[in-house]
Image 1 (cartoon, helix red, strand yellow):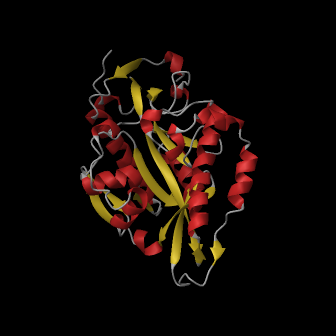
Image 2 (cartoon, rainbow, N blue to C red):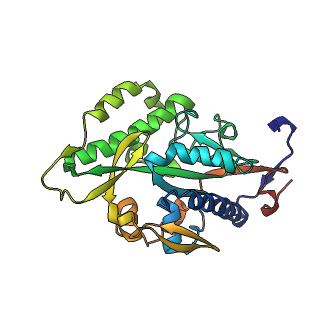
Length: 302
């Protein structure tokens, strides 16, 4: 059905529980299908933090983060399109250029009308609604990154990520979100003038290099961002074998050592709650269509 023919209703985002219930239902659909297809996945980033610190969602969170092996990305896109197309729009980084994750599963019949991430000139409803973000890691054997190269690649990865967004959306990231160290030093719109090719060349010059300092028997998993190796990496045994925990009322997979993964993302104080002004979701307003498979979970305004 064309969006112009659908009946949309505004959602009171101050009441976050209905949105989280819809996302839990969505997560259950996806994880059950991945199990049936023998695809390894695990909760990650804010969703993993919520599972460990809260037993479910971080109270103000409004999306889902999971990670899979990079080699499974195409297969997962095909599986969701084939088996769960009634529930999700599958958005991929290569086709839907504003994305900063390899795959975004947007819940059918939901749309983000206004986001904290972009100024009001950007119509985010054209891109996605409530979503499950799928990240990826790749296996890297016997590698070492010097501290200088680690820092350089870390920041270049982030600059490349937001430069790509600026090129396609010509948007300024909100200072309220404190997404990156430099967001108080200059406006991200300046990145729309930086050639992506030049940034790629810089990133490719800072590669993982073989080193005898790393035990050859150890296998690393390196996070991928915008199809480039990111600075973050962890030991294989921190992830596998995954284990099951309850996320609200469904069983989901998490890394074998979630504490190490959370310290990698958030530092050693990951259990500490942030200050009140940083407890923000990802968007300001949301709409749901009456024909959405998740409509029954929402309290609509009009």
